[in-house]
Image (cartoon, rainbow, N blue to C red; front, side):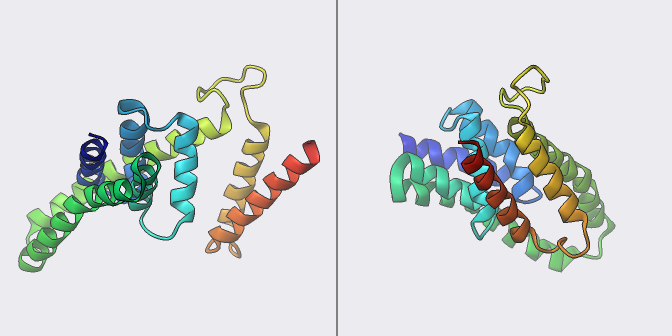
Length: 190
Protein backbone atom coordinates (compact mmCIF):
# COMPACT_ATOMS: atom_id res chain seq x y z
CA UNK A 1 0.00 0.00 0.00
CA UNK A 2 2.71 2.50 1.00
CA UNK A 3 4.74 1.71 -2.13
CA UNK A 4 1.79 2.53 -4.37
CA UNK A 5 1.12 5.77 -2.49
CA UNK A 6 4.80 6.76 -2.66
CA UNK A 7 4.98 6.02 -6.37
CA UNK A 8 1.76 7.87 -7.26
CA UNK A 9 2.54 10.88 -5.02
CA UNK A 10 6.01 11.37 -6.46
CA UNK A 11 4.87 10.53 -9.99
CA UNK A 12 2.45 13.48 -9.70
CA UNK A 13 5.22 15.68 -8.33
CA UNK A 14 7.55 14.71 -11.16
CA UNK A 15 4.85 15.20 -13.78
CA UNK A 16 3.74 18.63 -12.57
CA UNK A 17 6.91 20.32 -11.33
CA UNK A 18 8.03 22.44 -14.24
CA UNK A 19 10.99 24.65 -13.41
CA UNK A 20 13.13 22.39 -11.26
CA UNK A 21 13.44 21.69 -7.56
CA UNK A 22 12.29 25.01 -6.14
CA UNK A 23 9.18 24.93 -8.28
CA UNK A 24 8.50 21.39 -7.01
CA UNK A 25 8.55 22.40 -3.34
CA UNK A 26 4.87 23.45 -3.12
CA UNK A 27 3.90 20.16 -4.77
CA UNK A 28 6.12 18.12 -2.46
CA UNK A 29 4.65 19.93 0.55
CA UNK A 30 1.10 19.36 -0.70
CA UNK A 31 1.69 15.61 -1.04
CA UNK A 32 3.92 14.87 1.96
CA UNK A 33 2.44 17.23 4.55
CA UNK A 34 -1.11 18.07 3.53
CA UNK A 35 -2.41 15.05 1.59
CA UNK A 36 -0.70 12.04 3.19
CA UNK A 37 0.60 13.53 6.45
CA UNK A 38 3.92 11.76 6.08
CA UNK A 39 5.76 14.84 7.36
CA UNK A 40 4.94 17.60 9.82
CA UNK A 41 5.53 21.21 8.70
CA UNK A 42 8.76 21.16 10.72
CA UNK A 43 9.71 17.85 9.13
CA UNK A 44 9.13 19.40 5.71
CA UNK A 45 11.51 22.24 6.58
CA UNK A 46 14.09 19.64 7.59
CA UNK A 47 13.45 17.81 4.31
CA UNK A 48 14.12 20.99 2.35
CA UNK A 49 17.36 21.53 4.24
CA UNK A 50 18.54 17.98 3.60
CA UNK A 51 17.45 18.01 -0.05
CA UNK A 52 19.30 21.29 -0.61
CA UNK A 53 22.51 20.17 1.06
CA UNK A 54 22.65 16.77 -0.63
CA UNK A 55 24.18 16.68 -4.12
CA UNK A 56 21.65 16.13 -6.88
CA UNK A 57 18.23 17.41 -7.90
CA UNK A 58 16.09 18.62 -5.00
CA UNK A 59 12.97 16.67 -6.01
CA UNK A 60 14.95 13.44 -6.35
CA UNK A 61 16.64 14.00 -2.98
CA UNK A 62 13.27 14.71 -1.38
CA UNK A 63 11.69 11.60 -2.90
CA UNK A 64 14.59 9.43 -1.78
CA UNK A 65 14.49 10.87 1.74
CA UNK A 66 10.73 10.50 2.19
CA UNK A 67 10.69 7.02 0.65
CA UNK A 68 13.52 5.91 2.91
CA UNK A 69 11.83 7.35 6.00
CA UNK A 70 8.58 5.53 5.24
CA UNK A 71 9.68 2.21 3.75
CA UNK A 72 13.46 1.90 3.81
CA UNK A 73 15.64 1.41 0.74
CA UNK A 74 12.84 -0.09 -1.36
CA UNK A 75 10.59 2.87 -0.51
CA UNK A 76 13.39 5.25 -1.54
CA UNK A 77 13.76 3.41 -4.86
CA UNK A 78 10.00 3.46 -5.56
CA UNK A 79 9.61 7.17 -4.70
CA UNK A 80 12.69 8.09 -6.73
CA UNK A 81 11.45 6.11 -9.74
CA UNK A 82 8.10 7.88 -9.43
CA UNK A 83 9.62 11.35 -9.39
CA UNK A 84 11.97 10.78 -12.36
CA UNK A 85 9.79 8.68 -14.67
CA UNK A 86 7.64 11.40 -16.27
CA UNK A 87 10.45 14.00 -16.50
CA UNK A 88 12.71 11.47 -18.24
CA UNK A 89 10.02 10.54 -20.74
CA UNK A 90 9.03 14.19 -21.18
CA UNK A 91 12.63 15.37 -21.65
CA UNK A 92 13.27 12.67 -24.25
CA UNK A 93 10.14 13.61 -26.20
CA UNK A 94 10.82 17.33 -25.83
CA UNK A 95 14.41 16.95 -27.03
CA UNK A 96 13.17 15.13 -30.12
CA UNK A 97 10.47 17.74 -30.76
CA UNK A 98 12.83 20.64 -30.15
CA UNK A 99 15.45 19.28 -32.53
CA UNK A 100 12.81 18.78 -35.17
CA UNK A 101 10.71 21.97 -34.70
CA UNK A 102 12.99 24.46 -32.91
CA UNK A 103 12.51 27.15 -35.55
CA UNK A 104 8.71 27.26 -35.16
CA UNK A 105 7.35 30.34 -33.42
CA UNK A 106 4.73 28.14 -31.71
CA UNK A 107 7.48 26.27 -29.85
CA UNK A 108 9.09 29.54 -28.76
CA UNK A 109 5.70 30.88 -27.65
CA UNK A 110 5.03 27.84 -25.47
CA UNK A 111 8.41 28.17 -23.77
CA UNK A 112 7.87 31.92 -23.19
CA UNK A 113 4.43 31.25 -21.68
CA UNK A 114 5.79 28.78 -19.12
CA UNK A 115 8.29 31.26 -17.62
CA UNK A 116 5.86 33.34 -15.49
CA UNK A 117 4.24 30.20 -14.09
CA UNK A 118 7.64 28.82 -13.11
CA UNK A 119 8.56 32.10 -11.37
CA UNK A 120 5.28 32.00 -9.43
CA UNK A 121 5.93 28.40 -8.33
CA UNK A 122 9.44 29.27 -7.17
CA UNK A 123 8.10 32.28 -5.23
CA UNK A 124 5.44 30.11 -3.57
CA UNK A 125 8.09 27.54 -2.65
CA UNK A 126 10.19 30.26 -1.07
CA UNK A 127 7.27 31.46 1.05
CA UNK A 128 6.43 27.88 2.10
CA UNK A 129 9.97 27.53 3.42
CA UNK A 130 10.45 31.04 4.80
CA UNK A 131 7.27 31.47 6.86
CA UNK A 132 7.66 28.34 9.06
CA UNK A 133 11.33 29.19 9.48
CA UNK A 134 10.75 32.75 10.69
CA UNK A 135 7.52 32.14 12.62
CA UNK A 136 7.32 29.26 15.09
CA UNK A 137 3.58 28.75 14.60
CA UNK A 138 3.92 28.62 10.81
CA UNK A 139 1.61 31.65 10.57
CA UNK A 140 2.77 35.23 10.07
CA UNK A 141 2.07 36.69 13.48
CA UNK A 142 4.14 38.95 15.67
CA UNK A 143 2.64 37.66 18.92
CA UNK A 144 5.10 37.15 21.75
CA UNK A 145 7.30 34.11 21.19
CA UNK A 146 6.14 33.47 17.62
CA UNK A 147 8.82 35.26 15.58
CA UNK A 148 12.13 33.41 15.65
CA UNK A 149 14.57 36.31 16.01
CA UNK A 150 17.70 34.15 15.57
CA UNK A 151 16.30 32.65 12.36
CA UNK A 152 15.44 36.15 11.09
CA UNK A 153 18.98 37.37 11.82
CA UNK A 154 20.57 34.34 10.14
CA UNK A 155 18.25 34.68 7.13
CA UNK A 156 19.03 38.39 6.80
CA UNK A 157 22.77 37.80 7.13
CA UNK A 158 22.71 34.99 4.57
CA UNK A 159 20.64 37.11 2.18
CA UNK A 160 23.05 40.04 2.43
CA UNK A 161 26.09 37.78 2.06
CA UNK A 162 24.59 36.14 -1.03
CA UNK A 163 24.34 39.59 -2.59
CA UNK A 164 28.01 40.44 -2.02
CA UNK A 165 30.40 39.98 -4.92
CA UNK A 166 32.88 37.78 -3.04
CA UNK A 167 30.37 35.27 -1.64
CA UNK A 168 27.68 35.27 -4.34
CA UNK A 169 28.98 32.04 -5.83
CA UNK A 170 29.80 30.36 -2.54
CA UNK A 171 26.47 29.37 -0.95
CA UNK A 172 28.03 26.37 0.80
CA UNK A 173 30.28 28.69 2.81
CA UNK A 174 27.27 30.79 3.79
CA UNK A 175 25.28 27.69 4.79
CA UNK A 176 28.20 26.38 6.83
CA UNK A 177 28.62 29.79 8.48
CA UNK A 178 24.93 29.94 9.40
CA UNK A 179 25.11 26.40 10.77
CA UNK A 180 28.13 27.28 12.89
CA UNK A 181 26.46 30.48 14.11
CA UNK A 182 23.35 28.54 15.16
CA UNK A 183 25.51 25.89 16.86
CA UNK A 184 27.38 28.62 18.77
CA UNK A 185 24.09 30.25 19.77
CA UNK A 186 22.71 26.91 20.99
CA UNK A 187 25.85 26.22 23.05
CA UNK A 188 25.95 29.72 24.54
CA UNK A 189 22.27 29.77 25.48
CA UNK A 190 22.24 26.40 27.28
